[in-house]
Amino acid sequence: MIIDFNAHAGAWPEQHISVDKDRLLHLMDESGIDMAVVSNIGEAMGGGSGTDLKHERLIPFHTVRPDTDIKSLNGHVKGVRVYPTYHAWGFSGSRWANLLERAEGEGWIVQVYLRLRDPRALLQQVALADVMQSLSDAIESSCYVRLVITGMNFFEAESYLPLLRRKNVWFEISHLQHPMAPLDKLARKIGSSRMLFGTNTPFFYPFVTTFRTMHSGLSQEEMNRILSGNALSLLDM
Amino acid sequence: MKSSLPAEPGKIFDIHVHLLAQPEADAEFLQFAHEWRMPFAISCLGPDGSMIPNPTVDEVRRANDKVLGLMEQEPGMAYGFCYANPLHGQQALDEIRRCISGGMVGIKLWIACPCSREEAFSIFEESIALGVPVLQHAWKRIDKPLPGESVASDVAAAAKKYPDARIIMAHLGFNWRMGMDAIKDCSNVWTDTSGIDPEMGSVEYAVQMLGADRVLYGSDAPGRDTLAQLGKIPAAEISHKDKEKILHQNAEKLLNIAEAEQ
Image (cartoon, rainbow over the protein chains, first blue to last red):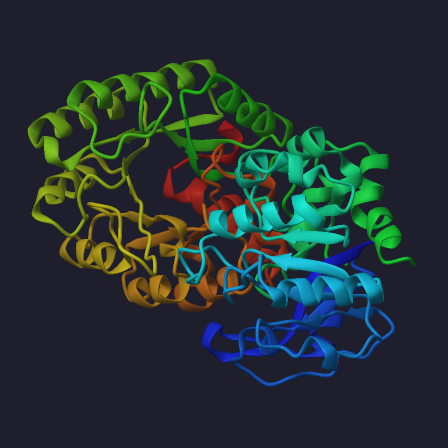
């Protein structure tokens, strides 16, 4: 079984992105993916229309921007997504505190997106290092909410190992693009129990993560954890 | 589910690899190449473990010597591309002749100067005289380019000035829509898929704009994860026949390498 922890549907015309539910399900089938955690890219980046995400194979997460009314979000989801390199969040401020309080109450996972595309192709409002510094400080001081870090590469991960080894933090793997064998190397640093399969669909080819995971040097046990075991536990499924 | 084939051992040629002069990283790549029975075109952009944008004559020579050494160790696997600095004038041409006569099969230009500048002209003239292709880095970013960095329009300008030169534009030009649009009418320009993230649609767009005959698989390893780079080709929504061309047939034809030789 494979669970993709990093997929979007919807439209973002400026980035030539347009994927409806049927197309997403087709891409998942082509890539051997059974279920996907998904949200609407148009809601996240404000550039396109919404799309219907209701389907037994899709696990919807809310998109939360700094101006989102946290109280207005319905509780019928398993998690929320924030994009702090694209939307300026202050992790020491009340908006972040309010989000964490609601997430803790609802049992929501908070997925933190650091990168959708290479920053040389898609401009970031806040540098990843600045986001990580302020996020690390906030998490170290008080956060027990379950967090998923998405969009970090291997070398960046090496700089935040204490954070990534915390029991309430998981690492989604789609942006491990370099150097050679980054999945194997990261598993040795933080343990495969902290890693989640993710594709970054529709920005990346979803099949690539399937291909590279299946051909990695990970043991079958490690692979099973990354492909779905960790996600099933995290999502309480 | 898509088949992993035809990205299978013995059916892949990687047109864009670097010898980093970092023993662990280089050994890791060689192990992968042997496991996948994958020959490769390789250049060294710095003899001492880091890539040098504007190397001296001595640095270029020592970098190329490392590639010549690897070619001796890995016959039928390592096909050398000679690193050249266009700013070295006649000395660059002398170095290219030395390396090609030593068995290298191409020339690699990085970011010493944009390839549309006059300093680079003699390199293209030499490549025509020697009958070898030029692999040119091209990277169109949203912020400022690196000093001396070429973009696809530089490659197109050089290709139009030298229609007999055979040029491989690396990385799909990074911004692959702009890159393919810029070189689509230059029949003497190929492109490689190396170095950029596995962005959905990139390989299909290259095939649509250039035709599958002008697209080559490349990884930019060991700096990049070979599996993430390789996975783009089976992932792309193109025909099996086109995947085979991209994975190895086009490179073998461009470099005049018979399959049996490998």
